[in-house]
Image (cartoon, rainbow, N blue to C red):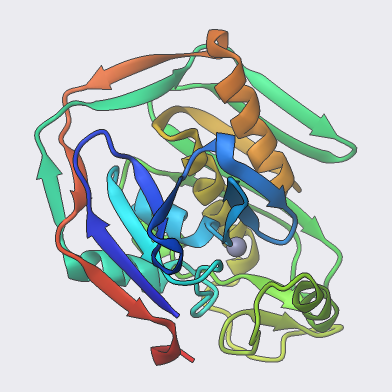
Length: 278
Ligand SMILES: [Zn+2]
């Protein structure tokens, strides 16, 4: 499994390229969202890109607007279950400023989606912030809330290292769906009945921080930076991407704003060979 980030020109956005399928390209946009359960997948003309959220989150968190993501496989590597290895990869490649104003999607009206006790909303704001609450029936988790402001450099320190989590039962279900082949203690926090199999946690509230990481990655599928305040409660990939679809469909909810700020691309090509991390 080989993943490579390649610099791209302004206006390109984030594009996945399957090098094992003649370079077939799948744009990272809500229009290409395929199926969503434990992870977010994109599909275009039958070509699948699976588990996009952690890399997309890292790209947003490091301010990358334009990049081509080459991979020779349908699933992005899970690595340590967080976005940190992707952030390191991006920083290693370097970031190049491109002289063009960046276009933002400024939320004009509030949007709220509810499904049982799950909730997600976005409200007008001058910056981009994400607030997440979870209430997970487990001795180590329970009720947690975490709020992140994306305009400061907090992402790399307080969000990127947060790992995904699951139980052995989840793992079996994911394997049956063809996801996380080779799931192990190295690539997620494994929950037991009243603790975890692989301590220590990287943060006492690592679980909810990871939900923030996922949400940022899923909202990247809007294709533009957001000016808005996002609030989620017990949501998941399906609700995150439902919000993306709703925003893309209803143009009265937002306007485009160009801010005089350089657009950036990853500097030079950077590689990840997944087996280095296995
Ligand atoms: Zn995740």
